Every structure is written in structure tokens, then in C-alpha cells.
Length: 76
Image 1 (cartoon, rainbow, N blue to C red):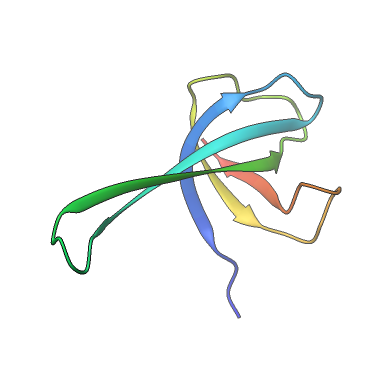
Image 2 (spheres, rainbow, N blue to C red):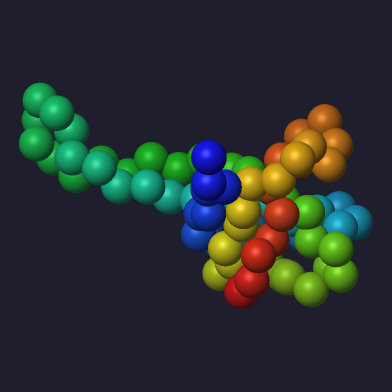
């Protein structure tokens, strides 16, 4: 099974080697036929602390790095 790749915006870089990434998805509501925006935050591994708040990044699934980290930053 291929690893998922998501694109989002860094919302926090306070922790060492970790960034919080906000990923937004849009879809059409099945009944209302209205476009809805849903967002979710993922904690991703950032080895070199290279990314700052506001950066647009791509993250990829990986083996668990800690209790909450299951993603790592792929690129900006």
C-alpha cells in the first residue's frame, strides 16, 4: 500500500524536531451540495528544525516516531 502524502501549513514549531501541520480538505456535502472545508492537524517529524510557522509543506506517512508522530516532512 502506498504511503499517503498531504499538503498543509505549519502552525507550530515550538517543539524540538516536530512541527504541527494543518491540512485542509474540501468536499461537496452529499445532501446540501455545498462545498465544505474540514481541517485536521498532524504532528510531523522535522529532523533539522528547518520549517517555521506559515511555511507550506508536504508530509508523508511513516512508522511511529513517538506517541503522536506518524508523519515526517517531505519538502517545502
